[in-house]
Image (tube, rainbow, N blue to C red; front, side, top):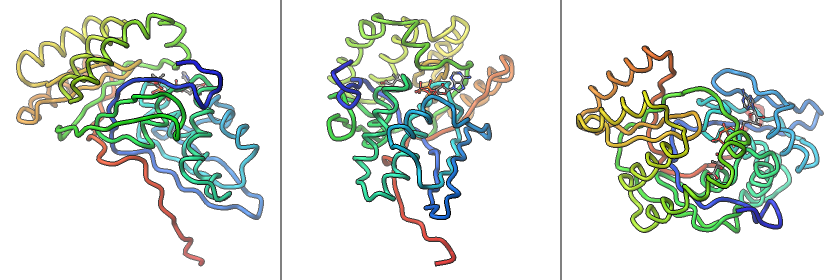
Length: 283
Ligand SMILES: Nc1ncnc2c1ncn2[C@@H]1O[C@H](COP(=O)(O)OP(=O)(O)OP(=O)(O)O)[C@@H](O)[C@H]1O
Ligand SMILES: CC(C)(CO)[C@@H](O)C(=O)[O-]
């Protein structure tokens, strides 16, 4: 929903919060040796990346040293850009004595201005398990509700890269028309099975799920190995049936090997983003 300001702009939507999380360490650097080291799956994310540039510009400069390691790659669909924006904004915001919510609002604004996300920041700040965004905007304005996800393991299969800006260009107005009735049905009955059903339909209609993948994963559902699946941008999310987890994993490993895809194992996140003070051993 595009509103008068980036703070008010945001999305209504639903998603799954997954672990392991991206982890950032932030230190003050009074000696002037501030730096940013952001890695996603070992790959260095450049300081000229649009999300990094926007958040640093909104903050008016950095006086902290930020190291972030993301276990998932950028520009696939895992919302890694929001994790980067949050790490930088909360890191610098803590130095300035800002609340986590005020810092996270800057991360949300940067996401909107960079065109990399509309609801990912609030989902991470407030959500756990299955999150439902019921009012748009930055932390402080958005309303997010969370529902438990009773699944032990969740897999992802990466199909390639697609920037969020590219997704908006490709889908345009169609995105809202396709997503709104499905979001409504999830809100009426917010649980993992409704979410998986509606998200699968949305991925197929939006053209995110190639035929070979849809056929394969639907077959695993009919065989009772997989509970549900969907594709967000270029990442397929697959929830196995808990009592068929071993067989489901073998099938997904074989699919990944055949197609040369990366398979990752996750679990539902049991809590939102956490911020903890750390003390240097020199203190
Ligand atoms: N190969 C690439 N393809 C697209 N974008 C890239 C690539 N490498 C770096 N980028 C940059 O990475 C960021 C991608 O943000 P984007 O929102 O698309 O990804 P994400 O946050 O990982 O996924 P999503 O928000 O869809 O869940 C942008 O700042 C973009 O400029
Ligand atoms: C736009 C988006 C799909 C990018 O990850 C996300 O921010 C959302 O759902 O608002």
